[in-house]
Structures are given as C-alpha cells and as structure tokens.
Image (tube, rainbow, N blue to C red; front, top):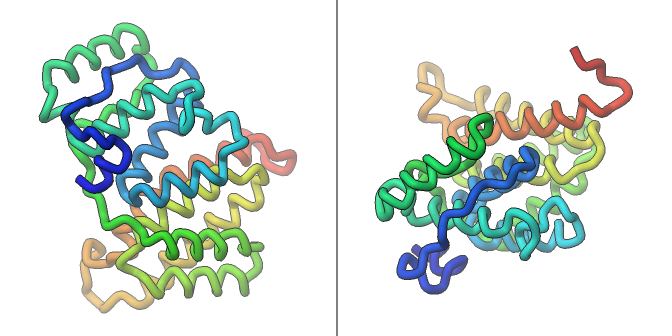
Length: 233
C-alpha cells in the first residue's frame, strides 16, 4: 500500500477512470514496461526515470503528455489489483472497449497485481545507475559491474529492471549490447555459483532476472535493426 499511496494519495477511494490505450504501439510498449518496472521497484525508481527522461518526448506520459491518463490507470491497476478484483464490472467494460477499438493491440491491463519485490533503496538506485553509465563493453567493465550486481543477489529483480530501462533509454545500439553482455555475465556467474543439483527456481538471481530478459532483448534488437552493421532478415 505504500507505493499506492505515494502515486495516488487518495488510495483506492478515488480510482482513475478507464481510458483507451494509445494508438501508438511504441508508446503503449513504453507505458506497459514502465508500469511493470514501477510495481517492482517502487517510487524512487520512477522518480529516477522522470529525472533522466524529463526532456525526452517519448516519456511525456510521466508528466501530462500523450498517454498520461492511460499510464495512471494501468499503474493504479497494477498497484491495487483493481482491474480484476476490486472493480470487475468496470474492468470487463474496459476490456470490451479495447477489443472493439484496438483488436490488433495487446494493451497492458493487469489481471492481478504482480508479485512486487521490495523497492530498491534510493542510494542503490543511484549507485547502480552510476555503474551502468560507466559500462563500456570491455571485459573489465563488465566484470566490475557484474561483481557489483552480485553483491546484492536478493535485489536481482529490481537491479535487473533498472538495467532494462537503462538500455531502453540508450540511443546507441552497441551501448545496449553492452548491457545485454552484462546480463549474460551475471547469469553465467550465478549459474557457476549455484550448488550442484539445485533447481533453477532456487537461484534468486536467475529468478529475479527472468522477467526482464525479454524486454532487454527486444530493446536491443529494435535498436539493432536500425544499425548499419546489422542485417535485418
């Protein structure tokens, strides 16, 4: 409830009204991913993104730009489980509207509140962002960043989500690849340290990173399709 009251001071007593998703597929994806990461990492993470992207029109929905009402609604749903549990009739009407207006799009409307790990402490968010900004792709920088990450395996979900958002904000394709290389190194080191015959589900790093890998791959591939040295097939 702490995150809910931070974003929505009146809490569940004044839920946002359902609104249609934006027709821009890219904007819809950015909103969906940020809502997903916000529920995992808490208010400090969102404030960091607001600061980093304040001059980026693609993230205007964090203020009052296009898509802001839809962002507010889906964020509220994710934090309160309003969509499926508290307002089932309202949610059903909203889904019907989506299917009629946007049959080809899959808007992010949570069926239930996702599992939310503890938000990252503000100093961890800041320090990890500094580490990511120093990533060059060299073996030394990847090794150093990986070692930093693995000092806090219990925060893998939050740190991984921050990696994905960081990569999505990078204009350079190779810089996004460096973040992907880092994710690979982290997972390999976690695998190497895993006790023999231990189930993957017991690996807190692997389980924490698992939800963000698709977003990280999608972000890198979408940038790669625009790079002159990448052939689209």
